[in-house]
Image (cartoon, rainbow, N blue to C red; front, side):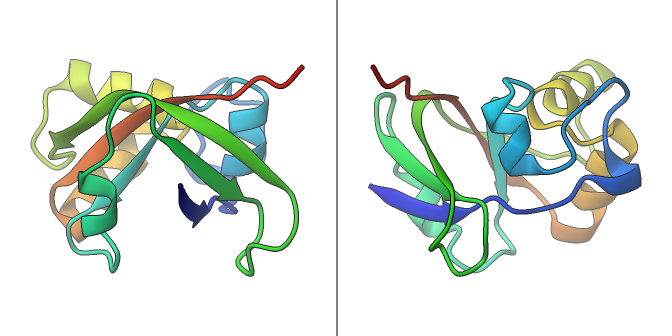
Amino acid sequence: MLKATMYFSYGSDARSGLKSKTTFDAILAGERSSTTRFTAWPGYERWTGLKVGDQVLFYADRDMKGRYVDVTVTEVPRVIDLARCSEADLAAWSEAEGWSEAAGRRYGRKYGPGIQIRSRPVTTP
Protein backbone atom coordinates (compact mmCIF):
# COMPACT_ATOMS: atom_id res chain seq x y z
CA MET A 1 0.00 0.00 0.00
CA LEU A 2 1.31 3.42 -0.97
CA LYS A 3 1.49 5.99 1.84
CA ALA A 4 1.60 9.75 1.30
CA THR A 5 0.75 13.07 2.88
CA MET A 6 -2.30 15.18 2.03
CA TYR A 7 -2.05 18.17 4.38
CA PHE A 8 -2.13 21.21 2.11
CA SER A 9 -4.30 24.23 2.81
CA TYR A 10 -6.24 25.51 -0.21
CA GLY A 11 -6.28 29.14 0.93
CA SER A 12 -7.04 31.55 -1.90
CA ASP A 13 -6.28 28.81 -4.49
CA ALA A 14 -9.47 26.87 -3.69
CA ARG A 15 -11.97 26.35 -6.49
CA SER A 16 -15.20 28.27 -6.21
CA GLY A 17 -17.71 26.58 -3.92
CA LEU A 18 -15.19 24.40 -2.06
CA LYS A 19 -16.10 24.20 1.63
CA SER A 20 -13.09 22.25 2.94
CA LYS A 21 -10.01 24.17 4.05
CA THR A 22 -7.45 21.40 3.43
CA THR A 23 -6.87 18.71 0.84
CA PHE A 24 -7.26 16.02 3.52
CA ASP A 25 -10.60 17.35 4.72
CA ALA A 26 -11.78 17.65 1.11
CA ILE A 27 -11.26 13.90 0.65
CA LEU A 28 -13.32 13.18 3.76
CA ALA A 29 -16.08 15.58 2.64
CA GLY A 30 -16.28 14.10 -0.87
CA GLU A 31 -14.97 17.30 -2.44
CA ARG A 32 -11.72 15.79 -3.71
CA SER A 33 -11.55 12.63 -5.80
CA SER A 34 -8.06 12.73 -7.28
CA THR A 35 -4.44 13.64 -6.73
CA THR A 36 -1.94 14.92 -9.27
CA ARG A 37 1.73 14.06 -9.03
CA PHE A 38 4.14 15.97 -11.24
CA THR A 39 7.14 14.47 -13.00
CA ALA A 40 9.35 17.15 -11.40
CA TRP A 41 8.44 16.00 -7.87
CA PRO A 42 10.55 13.49 -5.92
CA GLY A 43 8.87 10.10 -5.65
CA TYR A 44 6.86 10.56 -8.85
CA GLU A 45 7.79 7.08 -10.11
CA ARG A 46 6.06 5.30 -7.23
CA TRP A 47 2.70 6.66 -8.44
CA THR A 48 3.03 5.54 -12.06
CA GLY A 49 2.40 1.84 -11.40
CA LEU A 50 -0.90 2.21 -9.56
CA LYS A 51 -3.78 0.08 -10.83
CA VAL A 52 -7.52 0.22 -10.33
CA GLY A 53 -8.26 -1.28 -6.91
CA ASP A 54 -4.90 -0.36 -5.36
CA GLN A 55 -5.10 1.44 -2.05
CA VAL A 56 -3.34 4.62 -0.93
CA LEU A 57 -3.14 5.80 2.66
CA PHE A 58 -3.19 9.62 2.90
CA TYR A 59 -2.10 11.26 6.16
CA ALA A 60 -3.25 14.69 7.31
CA ASP A 61 0.23 15.63 8.58
CA ARG A 62 3.81 15.63 7.28
CA ASP A 63 5.02 13.09 9.83
CA MET A 64 2.38 10.54 8.77
CA LYS A 65 1.45 9.80 12.39
CA GLY A 66 -1.94 11.43 12.86
CA ARG A 67 -5.26 11.21 11.06
CA TYR A 68 -5.39 9.25 7.82
CA VAL A 69 -7.82 8.15 5.15
CA ASP A 70 -7.57 5.04 3.00
CA VAL A 71 -8.58 5.51 -0.63
CA THR A 72 -9.02 3.08 -3.50
CA VAL A 73 -7.76 3.94 -6.98
CA THR A 74 -10.72 4.12 -9.39
CA GLU A 75 -8.90 5.23 -12.55
CA VAL A 76 -5.35 4.45 -13.56
CA PRO A 77 -2.91 7.35 -13.68
CA ARG A 78 -3.41 9.50 -16.76
CA VAL A 79 -0.98 12.09 -18.04
CA ILE A 80 -2.18 15.68 -17.76
CA ASP A 81 -0.36 18.84 -18.79
CA LEU A 82 -2.11 21.58 -16.86
CA ALA A 83 -0.16 24.30 -18.67
CA ARG A 84 -1.53 23.24 -22.07
CA CYS A 85 -4.70 21.19 -21.57
CA SER A 86 -8.10 22.35 -22.79
CA GLU A 87 -10.35 24.54 -20.65
CA ALA A 88 -12.72 21.57 -20.27
CA ASP A 89 -9.94 19.29 -19.02
CA LEU A 90 -8.72 22.01 -16.66
CA ALA A 91 -12.24 22.50 -15.28
CA ALA A 92 -12.62 18.74 -14.72
CA TRP A 93 -9.24 18.64 -12.98
CA SER A 94 -10.23 21.57 -10.75
CA GLU A 95 -13.52 19.91 -9.79
CA ALA A 96 -11.75 16.65 -8.87
CA GLU A 97 -8.84 18.26 -7.00
CA GLY A 98 -10.39 21.24 -5.24
CA TRP A 99 -7.81 23.69 -6.57
CA SER A 100 -8.87 26.61 -8.79
CA GLU A 101 -8.29 26.49 -12.53
CA ALA A 102 -5.83 29.40 -12.21
CA ALA A 103 -3.85 27.42 -9.63
CA GLY A 104 -3.85 24.42 -11.99
CA ARG A 105 -2.40 26.46 -14.87
CA ARG A 106 0.21 27.90 -12.51
CA TYR A 107 1.20 24.44 -11.24
CA GLY A 108 1.44 23.19 -14.82
CA ARG A 109 3.78 26.04 -15.80
CA LYS A 110 5.90 25.55 -12.70
CA TYR A 111 6.13 21.74 -12.53
CA GLY A 112 5.38 20.52 -16.08
CA PRO A 113 3.19 17.53 -16.89
CA GLY A 114 2.02 15.08 -14.29
CA ILE A 115 -0.33 12.20 -13.74
CA GLN A 116 -3.79 12.39 -12.25
CA ILE A 117 -4.94 9.47 -10.11
CA ARG A 118 -8.68 9.21 -9.38
CA SER A 119 -9.79 7.58 -6.15
CA ARG A 120 -12.57 7.26 -3.58
CA PRO A 121 -12.38 6.81 0.18
CA VAL A 122 -12.71 3.25 1.44
CA THR A 123 -15.86 2.86 3.47
CA THR A 124 -15.59 0.98 6.71
CA PRO A 125 -18.46 -0.85 8.43
